[in-house]
Length: 272
Image (cartoon, rainbow, N blue to C red; front, side):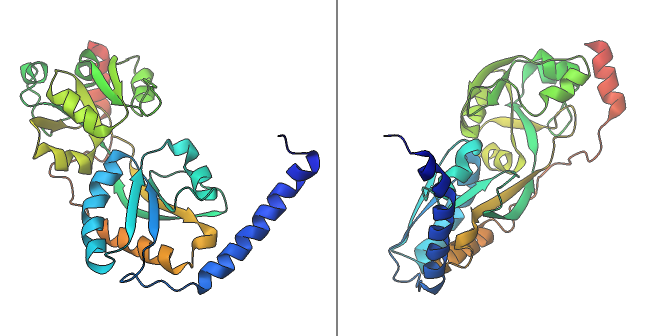
């Protein structure tokens, strides 16, 4: 079946009218976390689920024993459609450009760091110690594993390398940051993962952490929800639980450069 031109014309006004009715009903709906059996669907990568779900589950288990939480992973390009269609209640992602019918709240700031197997032979031969910045030429001499949900082999650092006339070789792409860390531990590849995730994993895996050759762009970890559910008591409660669970992630445990080291980059480019 195909919608008529008139049906397509009415789609948006009817959607807005239904959303208004839903908002009015939700505002008056009671929510008691101690007795509620409501289910909430959250969207986020394995990075966000690993940081969020353990403390969130602990909080919810004490105050809302019958509430169900489901966290799924999905491409960032489609998360707002999933909110709109009622397939999710909350999105946790990097800073995105939401439509006007979505509200956002910044939770904390993160950035990418480089990881390598402990005692990586090439890095050690260049005298590069954990916590150091990897020179651009050495960074490009080592094959990489890249977290890529869609299989793309380009990451945030590649345009900056290209401006120096350099390119790295992405040997492997995987859809999850956890898989990046496991692949790095089992090989001599380099990988890049968020700094707070690196802190969590280095206590469990045989990994060393380094700074990338240039400053990694800061990432605002942000929570998104539908505007029409802004005053819904259940949504308000869940957002407060999430904010408390992610209110103070541990800071990085090694210094991070705040300004690009132009001399080091230029030297790396000359040697490449």
